[in-house]
Image (cartoon, rainbow, N blue to C red; front, side):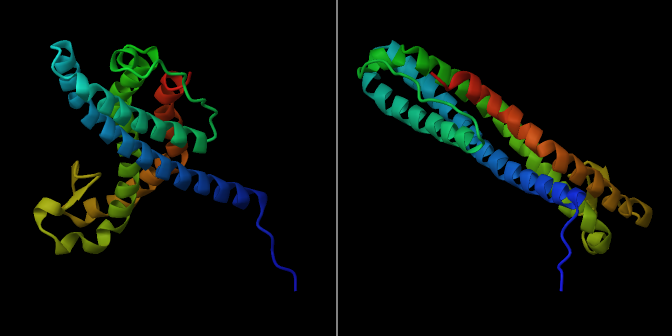
Length: 200
């Protein structure tokens, strides 16, 4: 008995779905490194001020070691996304040489950009999925929660009537389409700062 083979459009949809799911994972990974980058910024400012005052020299190398670990994590993500990115050539071993290395300056620039833009891209991808799940099922449970929770579109649209509740699946469908087609593009944008700043 012959098994029916999937048609070309079906294979294309499956491939796009796998790509969207894969992109969501990498967007979340990038969002995690983005949050770490945000936390790194104030620490870097404190270390720089103490170094300028000549009292924080011993903090420079541990901070740069953390910075290298964080940027290496992003380089690994970029390679798994299919990009070729070589490790940069670094200056000498001393704190001053490493702190003044152009590679360090580019990595610090990446921390600033990725800490904002990388987190934003991850938030958009994940919010589209959350909106899809919440609003698709909204007509089934909205009457069983309090007025403060009777909201669609991530809490932006009050929906306290039957007619408003029926908007949930419509919004969910739009959010799903945006996620399905947009998540690979958002991950590509999320990768751009690393591609421009973390290579040699």
